[in-house]
Length: 339
Length: 294
Image (cartoon, chains in turn purple, red):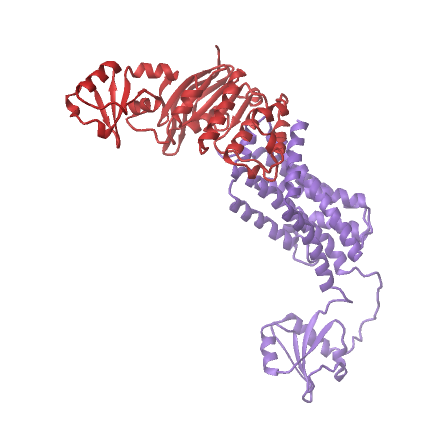
Protein backbone atom coordinates (compact mmCIF):
# COMPACT_ATOMS: atom_id res chain seq x y z
CA UNK A 1 0.00 0.00 0.00
CA UNK A 2 2.77 2.43 0.94
CA UNK A 3 4.57 1.63 -2.34
CA UNK A 4 1.49 2.43 -4.37
CA UNK A 5 0.82 5.69 -2.51
CA UNK A 6 4.47 6.61 -2.98
CA UNK A 7 4.35 5.93 -6.73
CA UNK A 8 1.35 8.19 -7.28
CA UNK A 9 2.67 10.83 -4.88
CA UNK A 10 6.06 10.93 -6.56
CA UNK A 11 4.62 11.15 -10.07
CA UNK A 12 2.23 13.91 -9.03
CA UNK A 13 5.05 15.90 -7.42
CA UNK A 14 7.12 15.66 -10.60
CA UNK A 15 4.14 16.77 -12.67
CA UNK A 16 3.54 19.75 -10.40
CA UNK A 17 7.17 20.86 -10.24
CA UNK A 18 7.66 20.53 -14.02
CA UNK A 19 4.61 22.68 -14.75
CA UNK A 20 6.78 25.78 -14.44
CA UNK A 21 4.09 28.31 -15.24
CA UNK A 22 1.76 27.08 -12.51
CA UNK A 23 4.61 26.77 -10.03
CA UNK A 24 5.83 30.30 -10.69
CA UNK A 25 2.33 31.64 -10.33
CA UNK A 26 1.90 29.85 -7.01
CA UNK A 27 4.92 31.67 -5.61
CA UNK A 28 4.68 34.99 -7.38
CA UNK A 29 1.01 35.81 -6.86
CA UNK A 30 0.99 35.90 -3.03
CA UNK A 31 4.26 37.86 -2.88
CA UNK A 32 2.94 40.45 -5.32
CA UNK A 33 -0.37 40.68 -3.47
CA UNK A 34 1.23 41.16 -0.07
CA UNK A 35 3.70 43.75 -1.33
CA UNK A 36 1.07 45.53 -3.41
CA UNK A 37 -1.41 45.74 -0.57
CA UNK A 38 1.36 46.72 1.84
CA UNK A 39 2.38 49.64 -0.36
CA UNK A 40 -1.16 50.81 -1.03
CA UNK A 41 -2.16 50.76 2.62
CA UNK A 42 1.10 51.88 4.21
CA UNK A 43 1.32 55.22 6.02
CA UNK A 44 -0.09 56.46 9.30
CA UNK A 45 -3.57 55.41 8.68
CA UNK A 46 -6.14 55.39 6.01
CA UNK A 47 -8.31 58.42 5.38
CA UNK A 48 -11.84 57.58 6.39
CA UNK A 49 -13.58 60.43 4.52
CA UNK A 50 -13.18 62.24 1.25
CA UNK A 51 -14.05 65.91 1.26
CA UNK A 52 -13.81 68.10 -1.81
CA UNK A 53 -12.93 71.77 -1.21
CA UNK A 54 -13.79 74.58 -3.63
CA UNK A 55 -11.80 77.80 -3.12
CA UNK A 56 -10.28 80.56 -5.20
CA UNK A 57 -6.81 79.03 -5.60
CA UNK A 58 -6.08 75.85 -7.52
CA UNK A 59 -3.92 74.33 -4.74
CA UNK A 60 -5.68 73.56 -1.53
CA UNK A 61 -4.87 75.77 1.44
CA UNK A 62 -5.44 73.72 4.56
CA UNK A 63 -5.07 76.73 6.83
CA UNK A 64 -8.10 78.43 5.26
CA UNK A 65 -10.48 76.82 7.77
CA UNK A 66 -9.96 74.98 11.11
CA UNK A 67 -12.06 72.04 9.87
CA UNK A 68 -9.47 71.35 7.16
CA UNK A 69 -7.00 70.31 9.88
CA UNK A 70 -9.10 67.34 10.99
CA UNK A 71 -7.07 64.10 10.77
CA UNK A 72 -8.12 61.04 8.81
CA UNK A 73 -9.99 63.13 6.28
CA UNK A 74 -8.70 63.39 2.76
CA UNK A 75 -9.26 67.01 1.66
CA UNK A 76 -8.73 67.78 -1.98
CA UNK A 77 -9.34 70.74 -4.20
CA UNK A 78 -11.94 70.93 -6.95
CA UNK A 79 -12.30 73.66 -9.55
CA UNK A 80 -15.82 73.03 -10.85
CA UNK A 81 -18.57 73.29 -8.29
CA UNK A 82 -21.35 71.79 -10.43
CA UNK A 83 -19.21 68.87 -11.45
CA UNK A 84 -18.34 68.25 -7.79
CA UNK A 85 -22.04 68.34 -6.83
CA UNK A 86 -22.77 65.70 -9.45
CA UNK A 87 -20.01 63.52 -8.01
CA UNK A 88 -21.39 63.99 -4.52
CA UNK A 89 -24.79 62.87 -5.78
CA UNK A 90 -23.17 59.69 -7.08
CA UNK A 91 -21.43 59.02 -3.72
CA UNK A 92 -17.98 59.57 -5.24
CA UNK A 93 -17.14 61.90 -2.37
CA UNK A 94 -18.56 62.37 1.11
CA UNK A 95 -18.82 66.16 1.37
CA UNK A 96 -18.27 69.28 -0.67
CA UNK A 97 -17.19 72.57 0.92
CA UNK A 98 -17.29 75.96 -0.76
CA UNK A 99 -14.78 78.37 0.87
CA UNK A 100 -15.12 80.98 -1.87
CA UNK A 101 -18.23 82.48 -0.34
CA UNK A 102 -19.04 83.91 3.07
CA UNK A 103 -20.45 82.31 5.11
CA UNK A 104 -18.85 78.98 4.14
CA UNK A 105 -21.21 76.58 2.39
CA UNK A 106 -21.25 72.79 2.49
CA UNK A 107 -23.21 70.03 0.75
CA UNK A 108 -23.73 66.47 1.73
CA UNK A 109 -25.63 63.61 0.14
CA UNK A 110 -28.73 62.96 2.26
CA UNK A 111 -28.53 59.23 1.69
CA UNK A 112 -24.83 58.87 2.57
CA UNK A 113 -23.95 57.82 6.14
CA UNK A 114 -20.49 59.36 5.90
CA UNK A 115 -21.96 62.72 5.00
CA UNK A 116 -24.11 62.60 8.09
CA UNK A 117 -21.08 61.94 10.29
CA UNK A 118 -19.07 64.75 8.69
CA UNK A 119 -21.94 67.11 9.25
CA UNK A 120 -21.99 66.16 12.94
CA UNK A 121 -18.23 66.74 13.06
CA UNK A 122 -18.64 70.27 11.79
CA UNK A 123 -21.44 70.91 14.26
CA UNK A 124 -19.59 69.65 17.33
CA UNK A 125 -16.52 71.72 17.92
CA UNK A 126 -16.16 70.29 21.35
CA UNK A 127 -17.56 67.38 23.28
CA UNK A 128 -18.00 68.93 26.69
CA UNK A 129 -19.97 66.25 28.50
CA UNK A 130 -17.33 63.51 28.25
CA UNK A 131 -13.99 63.09 30.00
CA UNK A 132 -11.31 62.34 27.48
CA UNK A 133 -9.04 59.33 27.92
CA UNK A 134 -6.50 57.77 25.54
CA UNK A 135 -5.00 54.36 25.14
CA UNK A 136 -1.67 53.62 23.58
CA UNK A 137 -0.35 50.39 22.12
CA UNK A 138 1.73 49.14 19.25
CA UNK A 139 -0.31 49.55 16.15
CA UNK A 140 -0.84 46.57 13.94
CA UNK A 141 -0.24 47.62 10.38
CA UNK A 142 -2.84 46.58 7.87
CA UNK A 143 -0.17 44.56 6.09
CA UNK A 144 0.49 42.53 9.27
CA UNK A 145 -3.17 41.76 9.47
CA UNK A 146 -3.48 41.14 5.75
CA UNK A 147 -0.54 38.75 5.33
CA UNK A 148 -2.17 35.67 6.92
CA UNK A 149 -5.25 36.42 4.79
CA UNK A 150 -3.29 36.46 1.55
CA UNK A 151 -1.30 33.36 2.41
CA UNK A 152 -4.52 31.59 3.42
CA UNK A 153 -6.28 32.68 0.26
CA UNK A 154 -3.41 31.47 -1.88
CA UNK A 155 -3.50 28.17 -0.04
CA UNK A 156 -7.24 27.96 -0.66
CA UNK A 157 -6.94 28.48 -4.43
CA UNK A 158 -4.01 26.14 -4.72
CA UNK A 159 -5.64 23.38 -2.68
CA UNK A 160 -9.10 23.61 -4.23
CA UNK A 161 -8.18 24.14 -7.87
CA UNK A 162 -4.88 22.27 -7.69
CA UNK A 163 -6.55 19.13 -6.42
CA UNK A 164 -10.14 19.40 -7.60
CA UNK A 165 -9.30 20.44 -11.13
CA UNK A 166 -6.44 17.98 -11.50
CA UNK A 167 -8.53 14.98 -10.48
CA UNK A 168 -11.30 16.04 -12.88
CA UNK A 169 -8.72 16.42 -15.66
CA UNK A 170 -7.38 12.93 -14.88
CA UNK A 171 -10.89 11.56 -15.12
CA UNK A 172 -11.67 13.43 -18.32
CA UNK A 173 -8.56 12.33 -20.19
CA UNK A 174 -8.90 8.72 -19.03
CA UNK A 175 -5.92 8.51 -16.69
CA UNK A 176 -8.19 7.50 -13.80
CA UNK A 177 -9.65 4.75 -15.96
CA UNK A 178 -6.14 3.40 -16.48
CA UNK A 179 -5.46 3.53 -12.76
CA UNK A 180 -8.71 1.72 -12.05
CA UNK A 181 -7.30 -1.25 -13.95
CA UNK A 182 -4.44 -1.54 -11.44
CA UNK A 183 -4.47 -2.73 -7.81
CA UNK A 184 -4.54 0.92 -6.66
CA UNK A 185 -7.54 1.63 -4.39
CA UNK A 186 -9.45 4.95 -4.29
CA UNK A 187 -8.25 5.46 -0.73
CA UNK A 188 -4.61 5.10 -1.78
CA UNK A 189 -5.10 7.40 -4.75
CA UNK A 190 -6.82 10.08 -2.68
CA UNK A 191 -4.25 9.82 0.10
CA UNK A 192 -1.46 10.36 -2.43
CA UNK A 193 -3.24 13.40 -3.85
CA UNK A 194 -3.75 14.92 -0.39
CA UNK A 195 -0.16 14.28 0.68
CA UNK A 196 1.34 15.54 -2.56
CA UNK A 197 -0.55 18.82 -2.45
CA UNK A 198 0.00 19.21 1.28
CA UNK A 199 3.77 18.80 1.00
CA UNK A 200 3.99 21.16 -1.97
CA UNK A 201 1.70 23.85 -0.59
CA UNK A 202 3.46 23.84 2.79
CA UNK A 203 6.79 24.15 1.02
CA UNK A 204 5.60 26.97 -1.23
CA UNK A 205 3.84 28.81 1.58
CA UNK A 206 6.98 28.58 3.71
CA UNK A 207 9.02 30.06 0.87
CA UNK A 208 6.52 32.89 0.43
CA UNK A 209 6.36 33.39 4.20
CA UNK A 210 10.14 33.67 4.47
CA UNK A 211 10.37 35.87 1.38
CA UNK A 212 7.73 38.36 2.49
CA UNK A 213 9.17 38.35 6.02
CA UNK A 214 12.48 39.47 4.53
CA UNK A 215 10.83 42.08 2.31
CA UNK A 216 8.31 43.70 4.65
CA UNK A 217 9.24 42.35 8.08
CA UNK A 218 5.71 41.56 9.22
CA UNK A 219 4.68 40.76 12.77
CA UNK A 220 5.06 37.19 14.02
CA UNK A 221 4.67 36.99 17.76
CA UNK A 222 3.51 33.42 18.35
CA UNK A 223 4.91 29.92 18.03
CA UNK A 224 6.06 28.71 14.63
CA UNK A 225 5.12 25.18 15.56
CA UNK A 226 1.54 26.20 16.33
CA UNK A 227 1.38 28.09 13.04
CA UNK A 228 2.71 25.06 11.17
CA UNK A 229 0.11 22.78 12.73
CA UNK A 230 -2.73 25.18 11.96
CA UNK A 231 -1.53 25.76 8.38
CA UNK A 232 -1.10 22.03 7.67
CA UNK A 233 -4.48 21.20 9.10
CA UNK A 234 -6.14 24.07 7.23
CA UNK A 235 -4.51 23.01 3.97
CA UNK A 236 -5.64 19.41 4.46
CA UNK A 237 -9.17 20.63 5.09
CA UNK A 238 -9.12 22.75 1.92
CA UNK A 239 -7.66 19.87 -0.13
CA UNK A 240 -10.42 17.59 1.16
CA UNK A 241 -12.97 20.17 0.01
CA UNK A 242 -11.35 20.14 -3.44
CA UNK A 243 -11.46 16.36 -3.58
CA UNK A 244 -15.12 16.34 -2.69
CA UNK A 245 -15.81 18.57 -5.70
CA UNK A 246 -13.97 16.11 -7.92
CA UNK A 247 -15.44 12.81 -6.75
CA UNK A 248 -17.65 12.18 -9.77
CA UNK A 249 -17.60 14.73 -12.53
CA UNK A 250 -15.53 14.56 -15.69
CA UNK A 251 -16.51 18.07 -16.75
CA UNK A 252 -13.84 20.67 -16.12
CA UNK A 253 -16.35 23.46 -16.69
CA UNK A 254 -18.73 22.10 -14.09
CA UNK A 255 -15.90 21.58 -11.62
CA UNK A 256 -14.59 25.08 -12.36
CA UNK A 257 -18.00 26.58 -11.66
CA UNK A 258 -18.37 24.61 -8.48
CA UNK A 259 -14.90 25.60 -7.30
CA UNK A 260 -15.63 29.26 -8.02
CA UNK A 261 -18.86 28.96 -6.11
CA UNK A 262 -16.90 27.72 -3.11
CA UNK A 263 -13.85 29.96 -3.31
CA UNK A 264 -15.53 33.32 -3.90
CA UNK A 265 -17.71 33.36 -0.77
CA UNK A 266 -14.69 32.22 1.21
CA UNK A 267 -12.55 34.96 -0.25
CA UNK A 268 -15.15 37.58 0.67
CA UNK A 269 -16.51 36.24 3.94
CA UNK A 270 -13.67 34.40 5.63
CA UNK A 271 -11.84 37.59 6.51
CA UNK A 272 -9.10 37.66 3.89
CA UNK A 273 -9.33 41.41 3.23
CA UNK A 274 -11.23 42.85 6.17
CA UNK A 275 -12.28 41.79 9.62
CA UNK A 276 -15.73 40.37 10.15
CA UNK A 277 -15.88 42.23 13.46
CA UNK A 278 -19.20 44.03 13.64
CA UNK A 279 -20.82 42.29 10.66
CA UNK A 280 -24.29 40.81 11.23
CA UNK A 281 -24.39 37.56 13.16
CA UNK A 282 -25.71 35.54 10.19
CA UNK A 283 -22.72 36.59 8.08
CA UNK A 284 -20.37 35.38 10.78
CA UNK A 285 -22.33 32.13 11.11
CA UNK A 286 -22.09 31.50 7.37
CA UNK A 287 -18.40 32.38 7.40
CA UNK A 288 -17.89 29.94 10.27
CA UNK A 289 -18.69 26.93 8.10
CA UNK A 290 -15.96 27.73 5.58
CA UNK A 291 -12.63 26.00 6.24
CA UNK A 292 -10.74 29.21 5.50
CA UNK A 293 -12.34 31.08 8.44
CA UNK A 294 -10.89 29.01 11.32
CA UNK A 295 -7.58 28.80 9.45
CA UNK A 296 -7.31 32.60 9.23
CA UNK A 297 -8.66 33.20 12.74
CA UNK A 298 -6.13 30.84 14.28
CA UNK A 299 -3.21 32.08 12.15
CA UNK A 300 -3.88 35.71 13.05
CA UNK A 301 -4.31 34.83 16.69
CA UNK A 302 -0.88 33.17 16.63
CA UNK A 303 0.91 35.74 14.50
CA UNK A 304 -0.60 38.94 15.88
CA UNK A 305 -1.52 38.05 19.47
CA UNK A 306 1.20 35.51 20.16
CA UNK A 307 -1.24 32.72 20.89
CA UNK A 308 -0.02 29.18 21.46
CA UNK A 309 -1.53 25.93 20.25
CA UNK A 310 -3.78 25.57 23.29
CA UNK A 311 -5.35 28.96 22.65
CA UNK A 312 -6.31 28.10 19.09
CA UNK A 313 -7.59 24.66 20.05
CA UNK A 314 -11.24 25.44 19.11
CA UNK A 315 -10.18 26.24 15.53
CA UNK A 316 -7.84 23.24 15.43
CA UNK A 317 -10.64 20.93 16.52
CA UNK A 318 -13.06 22.48 14.03
CA UNK A 319 -10.57 21.98 11.18
CA UNK A 320 -9.81 18.41 12.25
CA UNK A 321 -13.48 17.47 12.41
CA UNK A 322 -14.25 19.12 9.07
CA UNK A 323 -11.28 17.41 7.43
CA UNK A 324 -12.32 13.99 8.69
CA UNK A 325 -15.90 14.41 7.51
CA UNK A 326 -14.93 15.81 4.10
CA UNK A 327 -12.32 13.10 3.46
CA UNK A 328 -14.67 10.31 4.51
CA UNK A 329 -17.37 11.67 2.19
CA UNK A 330 -14.85 12.06 -0.61
CA UNK A 331 -13.59 8.49 -0.33
CA UNK A 332 -17.13 7.16 -0.13
CA UNK A 333 -18.47 9.10 -3.12
CA UNK A 334 -15.39 8.75 -5.31
CA UNK A 335 -15.70 7.01 -8.69
CA UNK A 336 -12.82 6.46 -11.08
CA UNK A 337 -15.06 7.10 -14.07
CA UNK A 338 -18.64 7.13 -15.22
CA UNK A 339 -19.88 3.70 -16.16
CA UNK B 1 -5.65 -26.27 -21.78
CA UNK B 2 -7.85 -24.76 -19.09
CA UNK B 3 -9.96 -21.64 -19.46
CA UNK B 4 -8.37 -18.63 -17.79
CA UNK B 5 -11.28 -16.31 -18.55
CA UNK B 6 -14.93 -17.23 -18.92
CA UNK B 7 -17.65 -14.94 -20.19
CA UNK B 8 -21.25 -16.02 -19.62
CA UNK B 9 -24.28 -14.32 -21.16
CA UNK B 10 -22.75 -10.88 -20.99
CA UNK B 11 -25.21 -8.05 -21.65
CA UNK B 12 -24.58 -4.31 -21.56
CA UNK B 13 -27.48 -1.99 -22.19
CA UNK B 14 -27.42 1.79 -22.43
CA UNK B 15 -30.61 3.81 -22.76
CA UNK B 16 -31.84 3.07 -26.27
CA UNK B 17 -28.88 0.87 -27.16
CA UNK B 18 -27.82 -2.69 -26.50
CA UNK B 19 -24.06 -2.56 -26.87
CA UNK B 20 -23.44 -6.18 -25.94
CA UNK B 21 -26.32 -8.59 -26.52
CA UNK B 22 -25.55 -11.71 -24.50
CA UNK B 23 -22.18 -13.14 -25.48
CA UNK B 24 -20.52 -16.23 -24.02
CA UNK B 25 -17.09 -17.72 -24.60
CA UNK B 26 -13.98 -18.82 -22.79
CA UNK B 27 -10.32 -18.00 -23.35
CA UNK B 28 -7.78 -20.78 -22.96
CA UNK B 29 -4.66 -20.22 -20.95
CA UNK B 30 -1.70 -19.27 -23.10
CA UNK B 31 -3.78 -18.68 -26.21
CA UNK B 32 -4.40 -15.54 -28.22
CA UNK B 33 -8.10 -14.78 -28.48
CA UNK B 34 -9.18 -12.21 -31.02
CA UNK B 35 -12.41 -10.25 -31.07
CA UNK B 36 -13.04 -9.10 -34.55
CA UNK B 37 -15.62 -6.73 -35.89
CA UNK B 38 -16.31 -3.35 -37.39
CA UNK B 39 -16.30 -0.13 -35.36
CA UNK B 40 -19.37 -0.01 -33.16
CA UNK B 41 -19.77 -3.80 -33.00
CA UNK B 42 -19.45 -3.74 -29.20
CA UNK B 43 -15.88 -5.07 -28.96
CA UNK B 44 -14.52 -2.32 -26.72
CA UNK B 45 -17.56 -2.32 -24.42
CA UNK B 46 -17.30 -6.10 -24.04
CA UNK B 47 -13.56 -5.96 -23.40
CA UNK B 48 -13.88 -3.16 -20.85
CA UNK B 49 -16.41 -5.22 -18.92
CA UNK B 50 -14.01 -8.17 -19.04
CA UNK B 51 -11.27 -5.86 -17.77
CA UNK B 52 -13.41 -4.85 -14.82
CA UNK B 53 -13.52 -1.23 -16.01
CA UNK B 54 -17.24 -1.16 -16.76
CA UNK B 55 -20.09 -2.99 -15.09
CA UNK B 56 -22.32 -5.39 -16.98
CA UNK B 57 -26.10 -5.05 -17.12
CA UNK B 58 -26.22 -8.83 -16.63
CA UNK B 59 -24.00 -11.83 -17.08
CA UNK B 60 -20.86 -13.09 -15.46
CA UNK B 61 -17.10 -12.87 -15.97
CA UNK B 62 -14.87 -15.40 -14.25
CA UNK B 63 -11.09 -15.20 -14.00
CA UNK B 64 -9.50 -18.51 -12.96
CA UNK B 65 -13.01 -19.60 -11.99
CA UNK B 66 -13.66 -16.64 -9.69
CA UNK B 67 -15.37 -13.26 -10.16
CA UNK B 68 -13.01 -10.40 -11.01
CA UNK B 69 -11.29 -9.07 -7.91
CA UNK B 70 -7.98 -8.02 -6.46
CA UNK B 71 -6.23 -11.12 -7.83
CA UNK B 72 -7.38 -10.27 -11.35
CA UNK B 73 -6.22 -6.65 -11.09
CA UNK B 74 -2.81 -7.81 -9.89
CA UNK B 75 -2.39 -10.37 -12.66
CA UNK B 76 -3.98 -8.69 -15.69
CA UNK B 77 -2.29 -6.22 -18.02
CA UNK B 78 -4.30 -3.77 -20.11
CA UNK B 79 -3.88 -1.51 -23.06
CA UNK B 80 -6.96 0.55 -23.76
CA UNK B 81 -7.92 1.92 -27.12
CA UNK B 82 -7.21 5.39 -25.77
CA UNK B 83 -4.95 5.45 -22.75
CA UNK B 84 -4.02 8.73 -21.14
CA UNK B 85 -0.82 9.11 -19.18
CA UNK B 86 0.12 11.71 -16.65
CA UNK B 87 1.50 14.90 -18.19
CA UNK B 88 5.10 16.05 -17.74
CA UNK B 89 6.44 12.52 -17.14
CA UNK B 90 9.16 10.88 -19.22
CA UNK B 91 8.81 7.40 -20.65
CA UNK B 92 10.88 5.94 -17.81
CA UNK B 93 8.94 7.84 -15.13
CA UNK B 94 5.63 6.69 -16.62
CA UNK B 95 6.85 3.10 -16.51
CA UNK B 96 8.08 3.48 -12.94
CA UNK B 97 4.75 4.98 -11.87
CA UNK B 98 2.89 1.83 -12.95
CA UNK B 99 5.74 -0.44 -11.87
CA UNK B 100 5.30 0.84 -8.32
CA UNK B 101 1.61 -0.08 -8.25
CA UNK B 102 2.24 -3.83 -8.38
CA UNK B 103 3.66 -6.16 -5.78
CA UNK B 104 4.74 -8.65 -8.39
CA UNK B 105 6.29 -6.66 -11.21
CA UNK B 106 8.36 -7.42 -14.27
CA UNK B 107 12.04 -6.57 -14.50
CA UNK B 108 12.11 -3.03 -15.89
CA UNK B 109 15.31 -3.38 -17.92
CA UNK B 110 14.01 -6.49 -19.60
CA UNK B 111 10.69 -4.82 -20.31
CA UNK B 112 12.39 -1.78 -21.82
CA UNK B 113 14.38 -4.06 -24.09
CA UNK B 114 11.35 -6.17 -25.04
CA UNK B 115 9.40 -3.09 -26.11
CA UNK B 116 12.43 -1.35 -27.69
CA UNK B 117 12.17 1.72 -25.50
CA UNK B 118 15.90 2.15 -24.76
CA UNK B 119 16.28 5.25 -26.91
CA UNK B 120 13.13 6.92 -25.59
CA UNK B 121 13.51 6.69 -21.82
CA UNK B 122 14.09 10.40 -21.19
CA UNK B 123 11.52 11.66 -23.64
CA UNK B 124 8.32 13.36 -22.45
CA UNK B 125 5.54 10.85 -23.02
CA UNK B 126 3.54 13.48 -24.92
CA UNK B 127 6.26 13.73 -27.56
CA UNK B 128 6.13 10.16 -28.84
CA UNK B 129 5.04 9.03 -32.30
CA UNK B 130 2.00 6.76 -32.60
CA UNK B 131 4.08 3.59 -32.78
CA UNK B 132 6.39 4.67 -29.95
CA UNK B 133 3.43 5.51 -27.76
CA UNK B 134 1.82 2.13 -28.41
CA UNK B 135 5.10 0.44 -27.44
CA UNK B 136 5.16 2.39 -24.17
CA UNK B 137 1.53 1.52 -23.48
CA UNK B 138 2.29 -2.13 -24.20
CA UNK B 139 5.22 -1.97 -21.77
CA UNK B 140 2.86 -0.51 -19.16
CA UNK B 141 0.39 -3.32 -19.87
CA UNK B 142 3.21 -5.81 -19.26
CA UNK B 143 4.68 -4.04 -16.22
CA UNK B 144 3.15 -6.52 -13.76
CA UNK B 145 4.34 -9.57 -15.71
CA UNK B 146 0.68 -10.38 -16.35
CA UNK B 147 -0.90 -13.78 -16.86
CA UNK B 148 -3.43 -12.26 -19.23
CA UNK B 149 -3.06 -9.17 -21.42
CA UNK B 150 -5.91 -7.21 -22.98
CA UNK B 151 -5.01 -5.25 -26.10
CA UNK B 152 -7.85 -3.11 -27.42
CA UNK B 153 -7.18 -2.18 -31.06
CA UNK B 154 -3.47 -1.70 -30.40
CA UNK B 155 -2.48 -1.04 -34.01
CA UNK B 156 -5.29 1.26 -35.12
CA UNK B 157 -3.79 4.34 -36.70
CA UNK B 158 -0.27 2.93 -37.02
CA UNK B 159 1.61 2.80 -40.32
CA UNK B 160 2.23 -0.67 -41.84
CA UNK B 161 5.82 -0.79 -40.57
CA UNK B 162 4.81 0.08 -37.00
CA UNK B 163 1.98 -2.47 -37.16
CA UNK B 164 4.37 -5.22 -38.16
CA UNK B 165 6.74 -4.26 -35.36
CA UNK B 166 3.86 -4.41 -32.93
CA UNK B 167 2.89 -7.86 -34.18
CA UNK B 168 6.42 -9.07 -33.44
CA UNK B 169 6.03 -7.79 -29.87
CA UNK B 170 2.74 -9.65 -29.48
CA UNK B 171 4.35 -12.83 -30.85
CA UNK B 172 7.02 -12.45 -28.15
CA UNK B 173 4.36 -12.14 -25.45
CA UNK B 174 2.67 -15.28 -26.75
CA UNK B 175 5.95 -17.18 -26.55
CA UNK B 176 6.02 -16.52 -22.81
CA UNK B 177 2.74 -18.41 -22.48
CA UNK B 178 0.89 -15.23 -21.56
CA UNK B 179 -2.78 -15.27 -22.52
CA UNK B 180 -3.64 -12.48 -24.95
CA UNK B 181 -7.07 -11.04 -25.65
CA UNK B 182 -6.95 -8.78 -28.66
CA UNK B 183 -9.58 -6.71 -30.41
CA UNK B 184 -9.04 -5.50 -33.92
CA UNK B 185 -10.81 -4.60 -37.09
CA UNK B 186 -7.87 -5.72 -39.19
CA UNK B 187 -8.52 -9.19 -40.56
CA UNK B 188 -4.86 -9.83 -41.40
CA UNK B 189 -3.86 -8.97 -37.85
CA UNK B 190 -6.38 -11.42 -36.41
CA UNK B 191 -5.35 -14.09 -38.87
CA UNK B 192 -1.66 -13.78 -38.07
CA UNK B 193 -1.85 -13.39 -34.29
CA UNK B 194 -4.92 -15.23 -33.04
CA UNK B 195 -5.45 -18.88 -32.19
CA UNK B 196 -9.18 -18.32 -31.77
CA UNK B 197 -11.33 -15.53 -33.06
CA UNK B 198 -14.85 -14.40 -32.30
CA UNK B 199 -16.49 -12.27 -34.95
CA UNK B 200 -18.79 -9.66 -33.44
CA UNK B 201 -21.47 -7.61 -35.11
CA UNK B 202 -24.23 -5.57 -33.45
CA UNK B 203 -23.24 -6.77 -30.00
CA UNK B 204 -23.39 -10.46 -30.80
CA UNK B 205 -20.81 -13.10 -31.63
CA UNK B 206 -21.76 -14.41 -35.05
CA UNK B 207 -18.92 -16.93 -35.47
CA UNK B 208 -16.19 -18.38 -33.28
CA UNK B 209 -13.28 -20.74 -33.81
CA UNK B 210 -9.75 -20.81 -35.13
CA UNK B 211 -9.30 -18.72 -38.27
CA UNK B 212 -8.47 -21.84 -40.30
CA UNK B 213 -11.41 -23.88 -39.06
CA UNK B 214 -13.83 -21.01 -39.58
CA UNK B 215 -12.68 -20.60 -43.15
CA UNK B 216 -12.88 -24.35 -43.76
CA UNK B 217 -16.29 -24.50 -42.21
CA UNK B 218 -17.72 -21.75 -44.38
CA UNK B 219 -15.76 -22.08 -47.60
CA UNK B 220 -14.66 -24.97 -49.76
CA UNK B 221 -13.64 -22.81 -52.69
CA UNK B 222 -10.78 -20.53 -53.69
CA UNK B 223 -10.89 -17.20 -55.43
CA UNK B 224 -9.56 -16.52 -58.88
CA UNK B 225 -9.10 -12.88 -59.63
CA UNK B 226 -8.75 -11.44 -63.11
CA UNK B 227 -8.46 -7.87 -64.39
CA UNK B 228 -11.84 -6.85 -65.72
CA UNK B 229 -10.67 -6.23 -69.26
CA UNK B 230 -9.21 -9.75 -69.51
CA UNK B 231 -12.52 -11.37 -68.59
CA UNK B 232 -14.32 -10.94 -71.90
CA UNK B 233 -16.97 -13.68 -71.81
CA UNK B 234 -20.60 -13.72 -70.78
CA UNK B 235 -20.68 -14.70 -67.13
CA UNK B 236 -24.17 -16.21 -67.05
CA UNK B 237 -23.11 -19.37 -68.94
CA UNK B 238 -20.44 -20.19 -66.43
CA UNK B 239 -20.94 -22.59 -63.48
CA UNK B 240 -19.28 -20.32 -60.90
CA UNK B 241 -20.29 -17.52 -58.60
CA UNK B 242 -18.79 -14.37 -60.10
CA UNK B 243 -18.33 -11.16 -58.21
CA UNK B 244 -17.76 -8.04 -60.30
CA UNK B 245 -15.54 -5.47 -58.67
CA UNK B 246 -14.49 -2.04 -59.90
CA UNK B 247 -11.40 -3.14 -61.87
CA UNK B 248 -11.45 -6.86 -61.34
CA UNK B 249 -13.59 -9.95 -61.42
CA UNK B 250 -13.55 -12.47 -58.57
CA UNK B 251 -14.54 -16.00 -59.46
CA UNK B 252 -15.26 -18.52 -56.74
CA UNK B 253 -14.21 -21.99 -57.85
CA UNK B 254 -14.00 -25.41 -56.22
CA UNK B 255 -11.13 -26.68 -58.35
CA UNK B 256 -8.49 -24.37 -59.72
CA UNK B 257 -7.24 -26.76 -62.43
CA UNK B 258 -10.70 -27.34 -63.85
CA UNK B 259 -11.45 -23.65 -63.79
CA UNK B 260 -8.22 -22.75 -65.54
CA UNK B 261 -8.84 -25.34 -68.21
CA UNK B 262 -12.33 -23.97 -68.81
CA UNK B 263 -11.11 -20.38 -68.96
CA UNK B 264 -8.41 -21.28 -71.51
CA UNK B 265 -11.00 -23.11 -73.52
CA UNK B 266 -13.10 -19.94 -73.60
CA UNK B 267 -10.09 -17.95 -74.73
CA UNK B 268 -9.71 -15.89 -71.57
CA UNK B 269 -6.18 -14.61 -71.08
CA UNK B 270 -4.82 -15.84 -67.77
CA UNK B 271 -1.42 -14.19 -67.76
CA UNK B 272 -2.49 -11.68 -65.10
CA UNK B 273 -4.48 -14.14 -63.01
CA UNK B 274 -4.29 -14.17 -59.19
CA UNK B 275 -5.38 -17.10 -57.08
CA UNK B 276 -5.98 -16.67 -53.38
CA UNK B 277 -7.59 -18.68 -50.61
CA UNK B 278 -10.66 -17.35 -48.84
CA UNK B 279 -9.81 -14.92 -46.06
CA UNK B 280 -11.55 -13.51 -43.00
CA UNK B 281 -12.66 -10.50 -45.00
CA UNK B 282 -14.68 -12.86 -47.24
CA UNK B 283 -16.01 -14.63 -44.17
CA UNK B 284 -17.26 -11.40 -42.67
CA UNK B 285 -18.95 -10.52 -45.95
CA UNK B 286 -20.49 -13.98 -46.10
CA UNK B 287 -21.79 -13.80 -42.53
CA UNK B 288 -23.10 -10.26 -42.44
CA UNK B 289 -23.70 -9.41 -46.05
CA UNK B 290 -21.69 -6.24 -45.55
CA UNK B 291 -18.05 -5.45 -46.01
CA UNK B 292 -15.97 -4.89 -42.94
CA UNK B 293 -15.64 -1.18 -42.43
CA UNK B 294 -12.06 -0.62 -41.44
